[in-house]
Every structure is written in structure tokens, then in C-alpha cells.
Image (cartoon, rainbow, N blue to C red):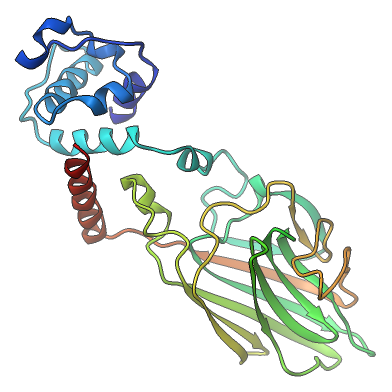
Length: 301
């Protein structure tokens, strides 16, 4: 129902609302109302218009203003109408990764576009790379997404494991093991615990859940070898012209000082597993965010 109402508000032409006395001279047609026009209504007009649209979407003339849930619908309409270009840009599209939280690669794979790659942004996650180092050592890329202007890389540099984040080329955060990997099989892990509420806050026109801090831990064969806090993370998107690559880097380097492409891994990748734990809003979180949205709406009147 709400989608139908927002659709009506979004595509309509100009209108003149006459649902209440203060607009009686305007000859209303709320079904053609735009978001800008809805937001310009007074607090007394908004629920009247919402009630009319609720009824119109159900084939009725009108729904009682006091109908259960209508106050929430008014707030939802306001939040939806205040969506920015950014929130529309990052709205999930159809993707082969949609609804999945665990991903496994058992061989090199390059060129997966960002739209089909699992997103780590605003979430906790764990990479687990099961590899084999040959005699003489190994180096190269295990898995990467993005590149010189934003992205991450999990790789072996001069025999030592590294996980690096490039924060839009303004800062690079790096976890590196102190010792060279010995020949044989190893399990390398990078675990990141995100501190924020996640993307769900955007539904309330609230950006407090994105781009927050988190703590990362690099492990070798189950032992933590590097730990570090990230005070900020990338909130929205990685570079559109880069890919997700496993076993090499076909785009630009996450850190030019460390390597140059293609930086193919010279050992053997048995398996790489990525597990993502996306934050979920609790009822208490939703109540808090709704109250903040309502206060913000009243303050903007």
C-alpha cells in the first residue's frame, strides 16, 4: 500500500489541494500530488491527504484519519519523499548475490562487476583463505574489490599476509603479519566487526548507521597476528569501474606502494570463503529512528 502511495506522490503533476479549509480555494486532486507539494503541506493537511490517498489506493473515497497505522504512514511518506540522490543510487538492484551472506571461491576468478559482487560496506565480515605456499615462498593477490580510489585487498606481500583498505585514496588502513609464511598449507583469516546499525537507518532518512567504525583482526592458522581499529569506513559504494578479482588484480592496485597489477598469486588457492553479518535493526532501534525522523520533520516545518 505504501509503495502505491509513494508512487502516486512521485509521478503526479501539479495540484491544488482543497481537503481542508486553509486550502479550500485550491481545487484539490491529491492523486496527482508531487512529493514537493506533499512536503509543503501543513501538519494538519498531511494526515488528511494521506487518508485520501490510502482510500484512493483501495478503491474507496477516503479512509478515516484515525485508522490504525496512519500516523506511521504519514511519517513514512515524509521520509520517502526526502530521499536523496545518494539513497536512490545505492538502492539494491537485482543481483546474483542478493539475499546471500556466504560466498566461496575454489579457483581464480576475475572480472566480477561490482553489481554482482558481495558488498562488505556497513557490515561485519570474515574472509578465510585456505592456501598452499610452495618451496621458495609465495606472494600475490588472494581477493580484491575496488582499487586505487577505493577498495580492499587481501594478499601476500613478500611472503607476509596483508589485508588493506583504501579509503577513497585519502587514507590506507593495513593489517600485516610480522612473519613470512613457511612452505605448506596455511589458513589466513581477516575478521572485521562493524560498530554501526547499518544501511537500515537510511529507511528513516538517517545516515547514522553507515560509514561507522569497526575493528579488524588478521589471523594466521588461528593465531591473531595484527589487530587495528578503523575509525571510519566507506559508507556508500566502491569505484564503479573496478571489479572483484580472486587470484590476481585486473584493475588498479589498492596500494601502488605494495604491488602492481596483475599481481597473480604464486601459491595455490584451495578455497576462499567470505561470510557477511549485516546489522539488523531491533524494534527499539526502529522506534528510536522513527522518533528522530518525526522530530526532524517537525523542526523543518
